[in-house]
Amino acid sequence: MGHTKSAAPVPVRELPRDVRDAIDMYVPRGIPAQSAHYYIQAEHVRLLRGRAQAERNSFRWERTVNELRRSLPDLSVRDVTNYVSENCYQADVLLHTGLELPEDPTDLLGTLRKGVRIASIHASFLAPTWWMGVRRITRSGSSIREEWEWPQRSPAQKVRLVADEVLGTLGWLRLSNDQVRQRIANVELKRIKPGQARVGHVLFSEHISFP
Amino acid sequence: MSSGTLTATRKRPKQAAQRLPDNVRLALRRYYPAEVSARSAAYYALPEHLALLRLRSEAESRMLRWNDAAEDLKKDLDDLAISVSECTAFSNSYQMEILLHEEIPFPEQPDGLFEAIRKPPIRTARLAASFLLPYWTIAFRKWRRSKKGVITTEIIPQKGRHTTRVVNAAAKVLRKHGWKRIPANLAQTKIPNMDLEFVPLGEVRVADVVFGDLNGSTF
Image 1 (cartoon, each protein chain N blue to C red):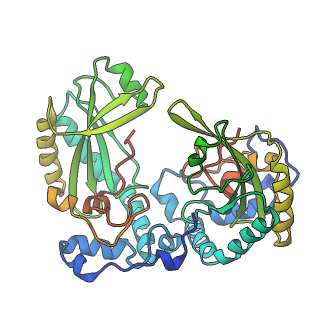
Image 2 (spheres, rainbow over the protein chains, first blue to last red):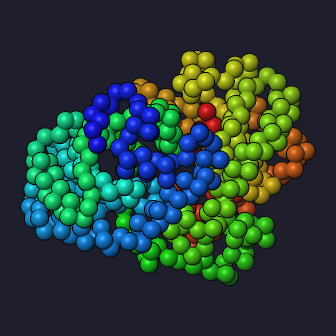
């Protein structure tokens, strides 16, 4: 995967083979994602079946999460995979020692007043690739802010190295921040405006905010 | 969130489903998987859900029917602006929004409402006609914008200027096009042992199935 620029969208044919194959297999093209016709295309139906199959095979990911827990004894690790609307297994690692990561991380804002930092490990259903991003959750007045950190700071580095080892043995290859941020021309997704789709939106989740 | 297939499995009891009208039961059987929770990815790969996706696609192809109804309604409500939704991908109904303020055109974006109408409250009527069953419904909404610019809507009772007139015009036009207003008690009837992607188990009403998710704006 040699591309590093994220600003200019590139055509699908110029993307690395794994990404290109995933788009060809699972993303309808030539139809707006706001059209109901998009959701009956073979590619989208294949995506729905792929998510169901990933859910059936969830025990493999549960084993991987247990392996991450063993390798990161000081940190709390939680399986937060959403098989219904995302395209990846996901494990969240709380980057604060001595605390349990609850189902709703905003519950920790009472204890961690400067904000909660979470490393989110995404391993795609659609291609043997993974990526780790760091989220920061803070309170701003009465509202909650959640942002992805760019660039990422330690101690996320340690988590990344452990994840690299654990996921690497299962055949998943890590994508860099630049690679997941790469914009793709002429690809439309349900929640992403035309022209704004990134490699990470296709392979992992449409909920990631890239800078 | 992990949702294992075993924990997500459930059955809709025949007894409870039998209390629903035949047409609703038939729609449920055709388009809503009965044995799996909507919190499981398996639900979305089942034939019933795929049939619902095909129905939505067919509804988009027949959009002309809704556009015709909208044209007829515009003749009756010629002083009120109407915004017709062209999207059938995420709900089970055709939709349009009627601005309950005379002689003001519909803006491109919701923000424009607050520039066009200086005197609050801003009120609209949202009309939805199902393509699952021949029923229509209407909801009146009040629009607010916070100091931070966040726009929210609130369902309000049917009262105030233009509301009765809009309901009567909708009833006349939609009857001509084959729809009838859904009885309020049927719309609110809960369907036991059923969930939807955004509606938890036990909270699903017949209206949620007949019209689909109506939370989004038609803008």
